[in-house]
Image (cartoon, rainbow, N blue to C red):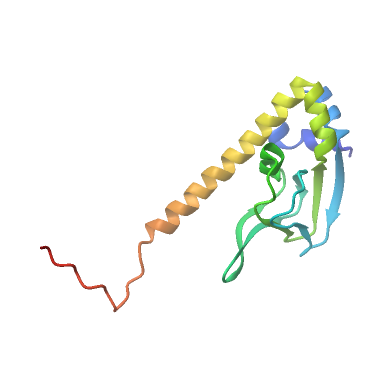
Length: 164
């Protein structure tokens, strides 16, 4: 199956017409990663965008306690779009949790394509917006669950301050 056909089966690209998918596919390469392989490192300056075709990837951040998985992405999900949009360095590590096949939208040819084809530009940025919106909602839900648990009880409670 060609890259245009693979992209056409992904919900984030459902609004693309066939000519735009075919144009976008010329900017893409398919890559396979064995399980536990690093794909991106936090702080890297790369700007490519990745679409998970098959498998699972973990988005991780390094903490004082070691790596922490902040998201797990599967088939049809996008990552790397924030760096593409704002030209910032990578905000986390990405590791293949399982054997994974990815479609990589190469930054330079993709930027050239969107500069000359406004239909592709609008469609692609819409896909990125939908992806980023879903991630923001997921993060908000995680934070809501985390903070709804309340503080842990301890025996050493601080003394109450007296009113003057």
